[in-house]
Length: 496
Image (cartoon, rainbow, N blue to C red; front, side, top):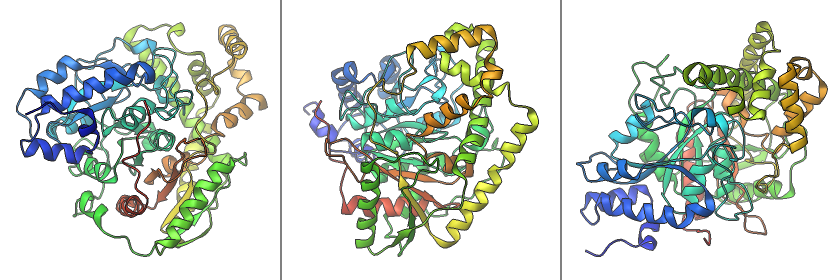
């Protein structure tokens, strides 16, 4: 049998590749070598894979594998997705040599499904940004335009999937980190609802339940099949049980959705500008949904988006402070091993009183109730996934002079007063302005999905977001399948 060529490999999604292995038409070792060759062809330009695991993968590919994805090459995100004995760098120089003793629960489930992990993908430091440009490993680039970002924080995984290295890859989402890169790279990104995917064994929940693991993929059925792998079996160490449908997500994704009521908005919840292309992406989706027989009209939940953003950042900054403190304790890392932006964000948490943090966390209930009221009237909320097309690499980087000023404030221990100023608060909101639509689903714990229905005049992908109600994963998957059939995207390939 002739060795599989890349163009043959690229024609299949992960479910399709697993079928080839199951029928004996190709071996896991052959698939792995195609994926490695593709990595070597494109990664020098993309910088998507920052920690190759070729020897580990070749040993595994030569072993007896079983499960729904037996023999399929796979990549982990280098954040939260621990592979025992392999460093989890989290995009940080401080953790580049830290190797966990145990697999995380999601990695164990992926391995039990038969996947062959051969590398870990780039992420911004601790997943804190919507672009993937960490000091530790350098910027990751978008396969559709190397001058532009693939988004973040799952930017390395999204770039690898879009470039054809793998059909599906590990990702995670605490403020949009699955949906933002999926929208930037023209692929599918589902953030599952709170608690559906286990966070153990090192955590009960990530980011107070706002963050979850998942995948980015080229096809909806791969995303559905991966959700079955991650969510079908309860985690006995989880803080609470989560209801899972009796029918598999793969089967639910294949069912034609009923006539859905969909409310849409293109207004930024921060009151900041929204690019004409982002508006056009939603208008295009609304038109397509109408042709498919769904009821679509302008509507949005009654939520103060600025207040939500501030309460989100209160949690985000506190978690950053905790993460830095743990890294220092576990590895002996020093301040200079963390990025200035990361340290400033952590420092801002120390100026928040415990009662203020508790009040901000309590207001999450208000946002959840308001979104639930919206879902009483509409099955789904449609918004842009991004407020503008993917930015150029470096466009959102902190200017050198401001980095120097931040370093000075940190050394003089003046960050507390500074983070109480209007200048700081305005800067925090400005940083969220390109991605103001995604945090709502994290705070409320609702499932949300980026679907690649639109491209700009220059050919850059620009996905749209659907936010579902409680337990709405099946509705999102079924609608995405219907849209995929009407507007196929999986075969689109960047010219690398």
